[in-house]
Image 1 (cartoon, rainbow, N blue to C red):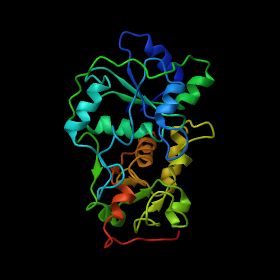
Image 2 (image 1 turned 90 degrees about the vertical axis):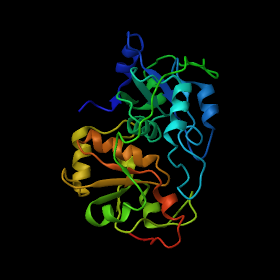
Image 3 (image 1 turned 45 degrees about the horizontal axis):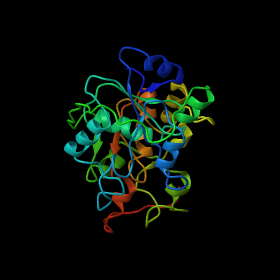
Image 4 (image 1 turned 45 degrees about the vertical axis):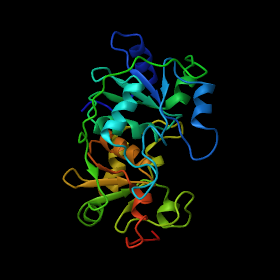
Length: 277
């Protein structure tokens, strides 16, 4: 199984090869500078920007804060960003891949065969002393990507209780949000009954790099993951849970993403909510 990650050194070499990847910057945070401000201040040379809120999701609603867009809409967006069916794609965020993983997952789900995440993001690129560009970037040549759904396992809201009962449902949010002690983004605090707390930030080291595969495997095994178990992951709105799926793949496990996540789960007041450890 090829690694879903690419290092700064590997990317620097690939940029000058005959099969140079398309570069997509997906930096996003609920607070602080806007993604556009971050991109204009400095991005990888030749990168284009994808917006988490508008390019990687439909409008918020009953399906959550960042519902999965329809395949036709996603196809148009990716073509505008220069994604070709037969050209590699590398996605990056600021440092820990927690947002880049969302686009990595989406492109694979919609059928792209060669997508990797820049391990360590823009921060690792800058620490290596490599150049960045400023401003809005140059519009790419329109791509020819064809979005066909089904390339990765996906959980719908109706499937979630069964995975929580009979498999393993991992909650990628912070432990405090899982326990219901705080909830900075959604109107209800707590977690899906039967879920197990597995904060996705624990998959990274202090510099934002994904931990080695053997460390990740030991972590997930300690949480109850086994090769023959159905595993699902969710978060607040399907962003950091994609990072959990990425880390699980590095560890040698496959997992399904619940894109709607907590923000969809609580849209129906009849769905049960659990609190505490």
